[in-house]
Image (cartoon, rainbow, N blue to C red):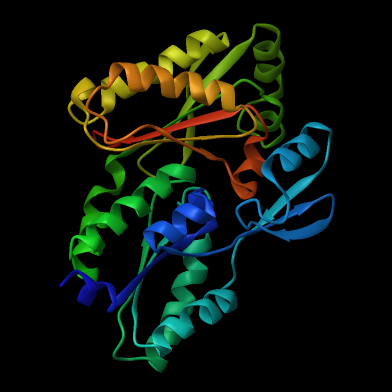
Length: 300
């Protein structure tokens, strides 16, 4: 039965789910790449294959200009069509609509392709998530598929549980949050002087929202772990998976992971540390750590 269901549909997402290429291959999840510009040159957000992540973030730190562009409807149509032609149904999960309008492009492609392939199912669902939180959703869906769940069951689960995926972020470098308008220049200047590390999360509309101003890296590392204690399913008895993503600050991410592995003894495996990809990283810059786990429903 497991193989039968796997042959009926594919699970798909955007590269902004921030898992490694090897991880996507291992769990058999397909992906389509966003685009970004670095000093006026366009690249594919291809999971660090063209430009390694450390090189990308170093260029940002050195003053390189970055821009991002979402996937258009034509690209989605060309990406989806071969799967449909081969007899597969599709469940495609999009980067949060609170961050980008990419779901509109995917939905346009769906409308065109449904006329061409009337016997195929095409689900386009908003993850209301980002980075490896979005990735943890995809990892979970792949496990459900491998357990024999149908595409309809996966779609129903996602619609009902996507807001249970908790996203918490902190940054030790405010430069790109100020540049992108997420933090005002005045607040940013004061914050830099006082060594403020903002703690943010993703709200129920899938938007990144500053929540707390924490003074000092050591304190914010402990504070983000406290948020997991507060919001994780079953608190310190949390038995699900935990993902972290980071932008050129692996040691900070490792410090968070070590605390979590010490304080949550029932975790499903070790904390997985990923890179924040070039699309989301173009807006966060270096110095951001993001923590993801299943927990209470986001309500604001």
